[in-house]
Image (cartoon, rainbow, N blue to C red; front, side, top):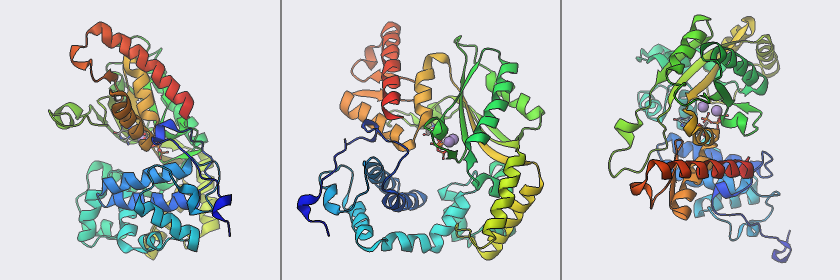
Length: 397
Ligand code: 8DG
Ligand code: MN
Ligand code: MN
């Protein structure tokens, strides 16, 4: 028992983007619990609650040591009543009843399995659940019409849910570098997303591509995609010019977080004897019983068989995002695609509320000057923005 006088309260700044957050997390029991509740809220179309739990988890992630006593949390930002209740529950009992019952709920388990399919969002999953579809078997036999993305997602489900390793990300980088070098010599490619933040695994691999000469990047994506496709390296791809202008940014609407860059959401076919070996080991060590994603026995068996098949082939499916940006917007694109999602959200909130500026993946504007902006001022602002983004990255990676 610790007396209150011995407890040293923690202190962290209010916005996630103002904190130095390392990959070392001293409070993973608490942050796992809050992240699960965040996930459940997001999957239930309650984004506000989701963000609140994500913010609370981010605060605990930034603490220099493990929380042992609730009084250490006095004065910390972003810890609402609900999050505090969960934290207290865990500090007192070792677990949170709300987290445990969420984890055990059929609805949550079904939402996780179904949204784990590439191309399936919370709304689709919810509709399927209401129609009695809770797992892959039921989906396969339901006769539901699946779009191209969902078909690919279902076909490569077991591969895609296996985390991507840094070695695999490097192998993909090699492929994309070769492709880019042959369709547009001089173009540059950067690994973004979680791997750029130093994470050791990811759910996909994210790349940003540009060319040092403005305008040379135009038309790059289709060439890149057909180079990869003609060599049999793509299992699925969808290239899109973003609908940002038409759908998101109408008058009176807040600017969208979604950017306008040309992008390609894809599934690569990566030849990896290593990946095949890992899958085999995984299947041998864990058997079919240890899956914890809430699939039924037959679902687990199905996945096991998919993985076993994976171990017999010499490739695996990996989700890859490709984005092309003109070099004049590269700094913002890089910052915007580095993540994490909460960091980006918080950085934009901070820019708006504390600095009167709006930040996107394209530019940084001073809100007071935006109407009178001349080319010249924009250029100067862009330079300032570039320096600002670099400073942020140094402070936060
Ligand atoms: P992970 O893949 O390792 O799980 O984590 P991550 O790399 O941080 O997540 P991500 O889903 O791949 O997203 C990487 C960043 O890309 C994310 O922080 C924000 C940025 N991003 C955009 N636009 C979009 C978009 O339309 N969709 C997604 N998913 N991310 C986007 O700038
Ligand atoms: Mn990623
Ligand atoms: Mn991604």
